[in-house]
Image (cartoon, rainbow, N blue to C red; front, side):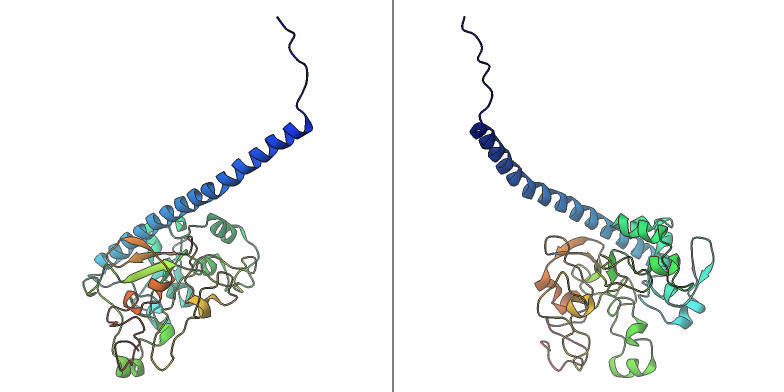
Length: 293
């Protein structure tokens, strides 16, 4: 029998092996990245579905009235009673934003509203709040993963929709009851959101979450509110996309009024028929003179 050769790999052979490994890794990484993003998307869609379960449970407990998206300060100081985890009453902006009013339907666990655990952990652990008003209770109401379509679902004082002057001109354009929408399967209620840095917590430079989202159109007089194209690093995400985040491979996760969740791309999200139940065209707005404007 011949002797076993003691010769090792040559430099060329080692380089060939390294190149082959690099090619295999290069082929595997995009597939792994896509798989991980798909897992995050599925998880986010499941969370959006659970949010709608809570939304409709709230309506059921409120005799069919849906969650008010952004009530007036007078409302949350009066008939709408909001409390924090310690049972202390909350008022002002903290109570006006939807998270503290819907979190009881998640047994008080904010993990149901925050897909990015790092953001929630930062809010819990931070000592970088700028003043007493910007407390944990304040900050955690700002950055939930999903923003509410408040101008068209529940109503928003940010648009003056509860005032007499607005009502005289536009009536009540937003949905107030669970049985009211004509197109519940296509009417988005919550959608993936993003925000810029906020004084409440300077450590969060661009949180993937915000309590509200705004539609591309509101009134005809104001004109189109969104930019023509989506910019994932826009310094002002409100002006660019109404705070909507296309973080799932160019799509956002939307929770529809009937309770199901789906992904929506830029074109779908620019269609006002997904935002306002009474919209008659993609560029419809309050005060329109036609279905297309």
